[in-house]
Image 1 (cartoon, rainbow, N blue to C red):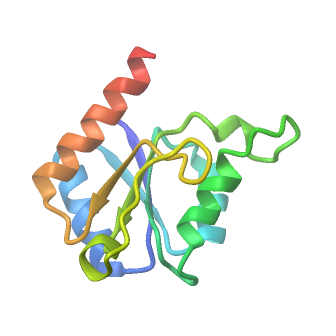
Image 2 (image 1 turned 120 degrees about the horizontal axis):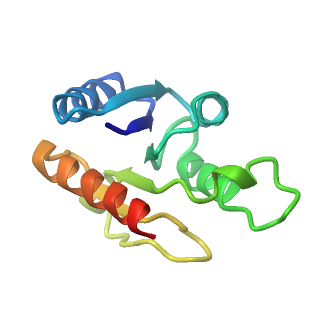
Length: 135
């Protein structure tokens, strides 16, 4: 069983993700914006973070990711750099923009599009958790 933190401002998304992951045996915690997310990360040290792209601002998820992955050895979040991040987005279905994980700008392990397919979500989470334990 893994401890998973979902950071999203949409209570319906949080509920659907929670139900899917708890049914798969995981413990799920939640935060509703980036500031609360950083606090929860420090409090619970999750095994995996599921992060929405757009919350209070259109790039809040990206900004949070960059804070967590900051390579500066004095970063306040350096001990959380290795936590896998699965980013949720509806951008691909609402705009012609396309993006994916990159080491510099979007240092996340994977993206998943909204609306979320529960089975696909659980498979992706399990794969990310497995990859973390084998590296």
